[in-house]
Image (cartoon, rainbow, N blue to C red):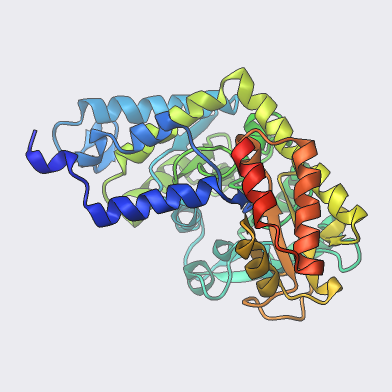
Length: 416
């Protein structure tokens, strides 16, 4: 072994150690973040980092990929098994570097440039890659947008169907980054069928909940399902694309849907896959098959519900009146506070959230009316409903009374 391998750059090591302490000493309520196991970190830092493997198992452009093929096949097998899918009906691509290129690959494979996709507006809870105009997805494709009901702040399926009929998109996207309620995938399937569109479900936020049986599965209804692997699924930062081999829309369009999406990932968008990331994903998928993960997924939802209920009892308005998942949006502007200010005040006290728009927000995105909070990371640490009530009280004290709660936050962190 060369001598420098074991001597980490002291500056980098110091920054890493500082970040470790920050994570230990703060309450992380960002719903898209989590805490992975040491086994996931070990695989992520493995020697697979050294290998190039352009192509797919059995069809690589480089030599020396015997074990690359093994790890990628294992990851695929575990992904299908975790979500109770058969290889006969489903294919999974585990090579996307992250969620954004995964979504981009689906559009690239199935929707000709300039044709129309349809997704939830960003300021209503959609994602940048669901067709927002600052994203490549909004530049390369025409976009139809739907929203949520102005009174209930929930999806209005009749209105979505009306928009789909008017706009005739070739692909409809369900699954969001800031929507807390159960999605009716069956209704989305009916809407997509009514206009001959593909149904893409982006389950990036809810994948762990689906795997653990704490949220309805989209696989019975979707043509394609994309997901990141680092949120509720509790894996490394990466993504997967599940492709329905039995897609009626693909057959009607005479499309080999697996081939088109695989080719969109490689060579369409990416070069060599990150094999260390794929290895770490395989570890996380294995962990998610354990009985403890089902309890974990259930507890995430219990914690989010408890947090939502307690905040409402303290006088805070929660968007849509609550949550069915791992996240919730608080309308802090209703208490005379802007989202950016709330985020800064909480972080000074060791509680990490992100500012977020609320439906029909009159404030700008960089200083919106809400904050988005979630429970995946605190649930991983072992916190339960009792701690959620405590956290809700801390949030309220900090934002309404400008109380210094750093000591209480540190004490809670030390217990978990």
